[in-house]
Image (spheres, rainbow, N blue to C red):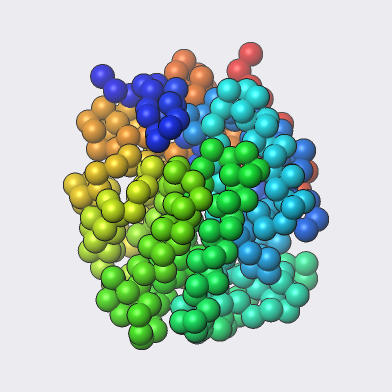
Length: 353
């Protein structure tokens, strides 16, 4: 029976297992958003993943949403990422880079005073962002003009080219969690008119243009979506319909995989998005959020999904595939160190003896 430890073909890659490292923002980049040796150690420790998806990484300068997140738009950032890709490949692993634009989740204090951009001038409410001046409320974004969007697409294309130059095996386009591409997708944040607003085929236009551009740079392109997640004040009037339409349309996008966050961090939106996606999407389907080994094996064995991306459990257990294989106890993650600087709670979680 197919399970977490069955191999999986992903484009040109043969993955030894279906235990993936989910993209986890950890805020350990150095000055100028440059990945350093500490990040390389972290990813190298987790190289036994079937596939490692490196964290949300800025495609363009001036779009920081996390203060110390990495970028992939400068020569120094490419060189820094090469430390991580070499570390993973040196241990026999495979790694792709999640490329990302923060959209309205960016803040002027993180970007030289620059106002964030979004599909519509609607601010994130009910949360705050970490900045050098402490936590601050999100600000009202500026609505992007239609003629600015080709520049966004080009930013993603160049990021994909840079990722391959930095040694990544491919890229994952971040279309989830209330960042720019997700903001265009969902009607709670996209209330514009014209070719990029209104019906779903218009709201998805920017995402599809990005995927086409990125596919011109690499054959291995994944996409992450979160149709239910209300993080960053996101909502959609019909997440099941959105999921079904996307799953069908993405069959023509040349994806290596589709990565779906199946639920909502805050339990504000509910529903089953995986079933309609599996029914309509013909490629490799990866699920995320709340899986343990038993549920993951059952879902893979039933053919409901093809792999599982583990988040906090992989964060705290660098040897997670082997622990799951043995049924060994898991280290508990320490949320207080998720975004703090330095190795504590980052590279000091113990391996199995």
